[in-house]
Image (cartoon, rainbow, N blue to C red; front, side, top):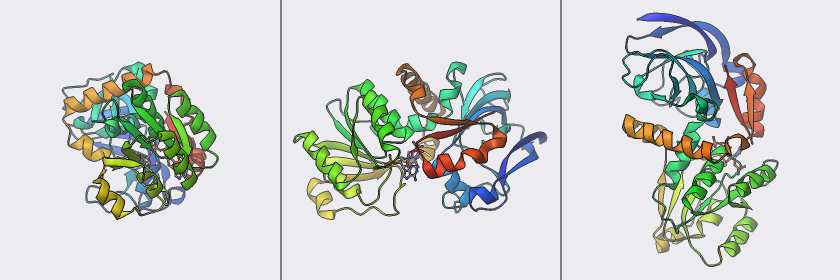
Length: 330
Ligand SMILES: NC(=O)c1ccc[n+]([C@@H]2O[C@H](COP(=O)([O-])OP(=O)(O)OC[C@H]3O[C@@H](n4cnc5c(N)ncnc54)[C@H](OP(=O)(O)O)[C@@H]3O)[C@@H](O)[C@H]2O)c1
């Protein structure tokens, strides 16, 4: 076991990010099999704040002992390849899902480190959003109709870009508010019409569907309006829940589910990645990066680029206001 000196945002107990995360210099313990990566980019996902405050991950037995490093995804350059047979020193790599990417240097199990084209380094900082989008659309027939909520999210934009590439019909919904207009413009350019995430929006979407049934409803938001949109899902349709940004429960009419024989399933990226072979993960990553970069829409989602030291300056924008993705640029 050797050690490498680094600097990053760590927390010694769960709590609000503003009071628990500290920028510290510390030594990283490096096991003989570990891959060591010098970071280039790491995103601030909404779930990262929940991990730090303990409402996500904190109670699982997989959580690392304190002190923990914040962040869960990133891109960097390999400085030590450990036991990896897939990456070598100097390669640009994507690492996720990992507990701790908000640090100048990180260590990772080689199973979590994937080589990428250096020209996709900035794009791949949020590759998890693209893989989620790809999986949410997996198995939808070409003639299928898909509805998604959470239209202001990066994931929703990726869903729209991938749906367009596959020729699917996609309708999006987004919450009324500051983020709506920008989301509407982005999704329109990706070929998807946007409706308000409200009972009135559900009525407008019903009219736009003109009798067509929705085959899959992608739920990243939940909340009070969930049931209004589930009502539009047709017989044997599927509802995939992957996020719960609004409210805590899903209230939906049992009779609707029964008569239409709807399926409600969940999707959780860390589990998908864990249960998928390295080769399939690599090919999935390569495919989504190719599609998203070819769409030319890579730069359309607003980002707040920030240096490691200045991380707190984008917390409020990223986690409270929303509508943009914070990205640490090392
Ligand atoms: N299951 C998984 O493995 C997995 C993996 C990655 C992400 N996710 C989830 O996928 C969803 C989208 O992720 P993302 O990284 O693409 O999100 P993002 O770009 O940060 O977008 C934020 C999302 O949260 C909603 N939201 C609700 N309250 C908000 C607030 N106060 N501020 C900002 N946004 C708010 C927005 O809905 P409106 O459009 O209605 O405003 C939007 O859908 C999230 O729920 C996230 O937790 C799940």
